Length: 433
Image (tube, rainbow, N blue to C red; front, side, top):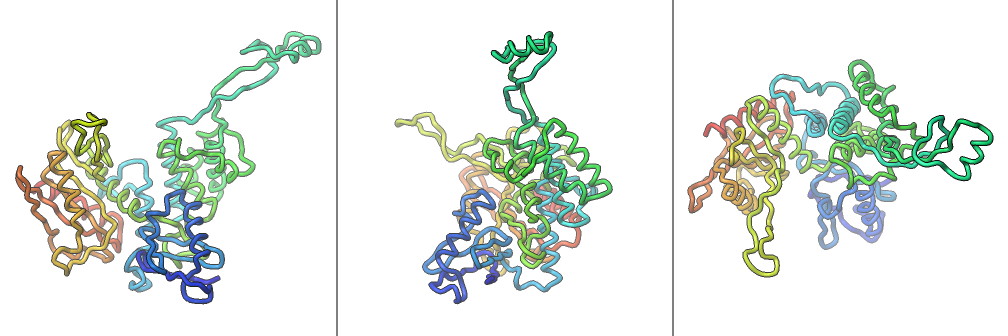
């Protein structure tokens, strides 16, 4: 099998002959189909097309396309040494675990156990998602049940009732409708938990047992993947959808590593912008909890404009959805708006490579939401930030200037507590400015 290794945004040539360096058009179609089938996402954000080439964008992992295996790593990862490459893989795994966690992260207290294998972290994340989902809503569906009972229930079934009255006097052939937990979603999650139960031990085994108890009313699934095909993810609450997709990854053996070369066979597909945003959101939640503040992630319902006249008069448009908002309890406006950008920054460049659209976006957030403190966070492939002090841009407006801080988030930290504490200190500084 041909092996193509690329960083995100590096082009892969489209060639006529599969023996050349690159892939054929047919293999590209298979690659895109594999992406869609594996992730359920629109491939429009995962591939950038050009004249005679395609660039994988915003994801890491590996995909098979016929006789070609395409492996993608974050931008800059191929230039790292083996030790830093392994550290990046481990840290992305920790970020994924933290982003999937159901409870706010306790900053600096070390309550999130990220030791052990990537598989164990994935199992722990699955249990947290399942238990959080069950606390919010127990999935059930109406079903028709037919049974011979001693006490009449629902309606009598004819002609079955006539036969039962003759053969078993005192019993009734009944039919009724009831809510049941024996549905594909619950059967699938029960099957995944049963599978991983024997592969973990200690406290994690008890956690799996606790999650399994929640599915006692669901029957055993003969074929979990067949149950998965019956599930409509778009109709489920977020925690259930994420738990089911993580469970599918565990069944397929895709929860053992992230970067190419971190395991034998396929590595896990990770959509990097979502990973980075979810990771920073969790840290912001923990920060807010520790300081008695409110943290809103992707809060909806605010718009930049509305139609004053015309056929759609009164309707609103251009919704504003910041990644993170920190506010004092019951405050009308946020104290800080933070947006995560999975993009490269260039400290030696006068504008650091920050786009005008990013600045315009933050200015729109600040002006509409009445907040003068904003920040953009970018990943940085190093052990520490390239800035001695985070640079601050002043954005002029008729109502006064808006402060926009640029934060570089190092991805090669030694310990998750180290990066969580460093980011919490940055947030403290921004709020005090």
